[in-house]
Image (cartoon, rainbow, N blue to C red; front, side, top):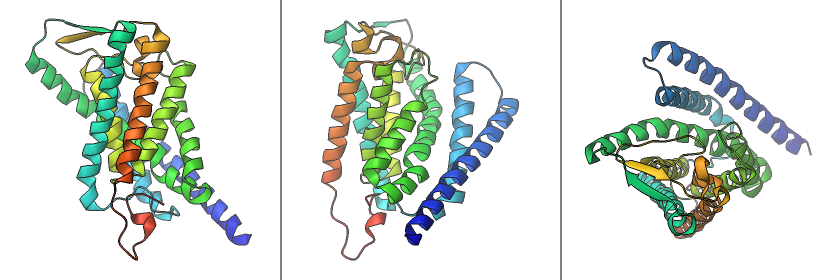
Length: 290
């Protein structure tokens, strides 16, 4: 009984310390970046916020993560590139499927807006710089140390449910959020939890997160309620909004939910193909699998 109480107290302490450190560093860095990063506009603000939040979460992970009770999400170096690439591929494919389904089902369509292919390629490069820090931040916060702590205390399934709910709650202030969008984002959290439990751990989850966001943004579709206009292409989501997501993007519609469930199934299948851990190895260090 005493051991259980100590474990619970340690877990609470680690979680509180992580949140406090991440919050203090994140807000301080955001304030500094706001003062010293030139420019203005939504893209600059997104980049400033994403970089500050990511660095705050990374510092909290480095400072607090050593006291987490398990090594969930820690991947061997040999798995980093395969994990990140596979995660990115599954996430991007899911985003494309969500948009493609909306064409026959909801009348979604693209039109050319006069831009060039070279401008579009440069824009995609900028999108990577904008979207990667935000994706990495959300993975560190929802599938990093907090997930490791809760999984060690309550088990991975309960931790996945709790932190997928927290992941959805992070989007409550996004423009045009709806109950269906919250359900879809919760399911996205479960998909990303499967990714962090697969080969590559957090690298796989971050790749999958970036893949989904980048596929939508590169094709000029909204991402979680944020408009992402692109050169060369204009996107009309069609309707009804409950089906296609409308102005919120595919995450706000039933078709996006279907695509995310397909992505989760693909990730679960890929995880099942992973080779078994070597005899005598610490199972908590193998690809983030407890």
